[in-house]
Image 1 (cartoon, rainbow, N blue to C red):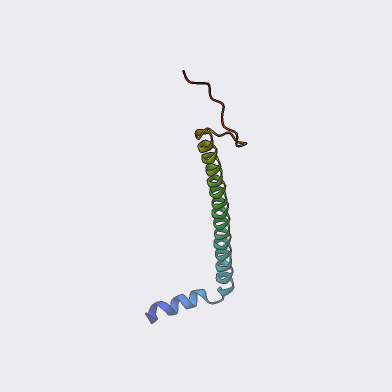
Image 2: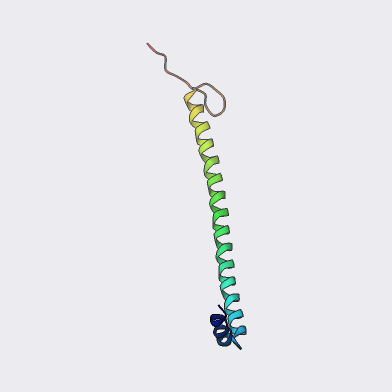
Amino acid sequence: MAQFVQPVGDALQGKACLVGALLAVVGYVLYAEAQRFNGASTAQRENEETLGLMVQRLERQRLGTKSGWRRWGSPARRSPSR
């Protein structure tokens, strides 16, 4: 193991600043992607909630018209059956 570590250490000597900068850039890119992903999932969750509310409202309207009552609470007019 020591035979491998010493040459690597010698090769990186004086390049610590370059390696640190590279790690900082990689960290920044990963952080930016995580933020973008988090924002997209938040927007998707809000859209799903809005869609759910719209579906509930449409379902209530559908059930309201099925029961024979109009929107303002008066019964729907029906033609007399013969």
